[in-house]
Length: 174
Image 1 (spheres, rainbow, N blue to C red):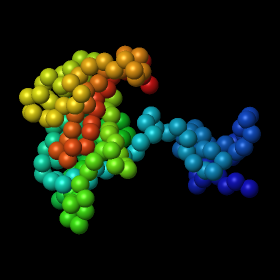
Image 2 (cartoon, helix red, strand yellow):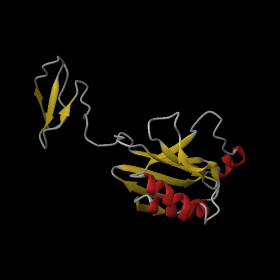
Image 3 (spheres, rainbow, N blue to C red):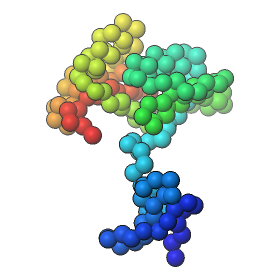
């Protein structure tokens, strides 16, 4: 028998299986007791280990501020920003791992793409932030990528540890 999560009641599911309703809300629970569709975005957080915390905290603070993220936490060697339920954490890499370095073609993360509300926002980041601050821009700057989704417009660039980042606008994207 499937148990209802704490504070939830069992309901019926026309497609079979159990559905639960939280006592505090009408949000459905799946048959394993997991809350479904509570947040707009499925990513809770990701953490980026950096080689120089001060340099990267400044870089990400400037960048994420331009993308409307708010700083929500700071302690020695760690800083965290949040927007619409997604958190980004920047933390100092432990000394014993510093000599390993980062390369986006190795196993692991290749790049992080941030969603832009418009092409103008992509252009603004490129012209008013990346270029004037000599941030390494990849692939010739902000442009349309016709082999991707229709209207895919992006700029790719690197953080201080050469982690590839992207700001992308796609019309009618989620």
